Amino acid sequence: LWQTAPVSMRPAMLPCLGFILRQHSTLLKADPGEGGPLLIFQEALRSEETALRLAGTEATATLLAAFEKIAESQSPDLREGDWGSVVAKASQLPAVSEAVQRLALLQPELLRVLREAGRHASAQGAGDASAASCATAALHAVAALRSLSRLGVLHPASTAPVLLAACLAGSSQQLSAAAG
Image (cartoon, rainbow, N blue to C red):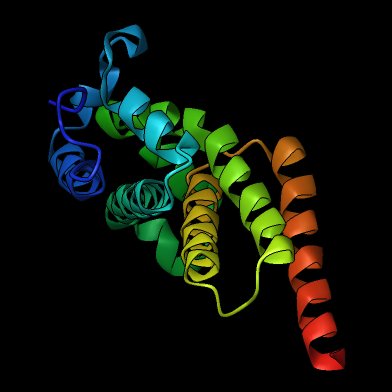
């Protein structure tokens, strides 16, 4: 369906796919070479089309937040702030664990969204509509990375430099706007 859908329809399909995957996470087990949901998310996050990339980051962040809530709901240790225990218990739930590990494969694409948002912000004006879409996509990417971190599958060594650069790029934009 994804391959035959008009390009203009694809951004609307991603939230639907995310909703389905919340209830049927085993669909993420499909072989990535067969055009499964993971490849659809990768294609959306890599897209040059702003609307598709925005829908992809939002659907990914929403899906990961849902899995995070499942992990939280099944662990009383959260009330005590013991995230290590929450992650350990969530990783024992086979469906959630495998789905989250598959979604963790999207980390490079989420980091790419952050890098591109920084480049776009420095090249475009702050009032530009596509700059706003890129900034929103970056916020969703950060939310997805946060969920990956809380679920214990984030690779911090590759994430920290990109997050630091995004923070500094945002600060330099704010400083130059304030000075200008």
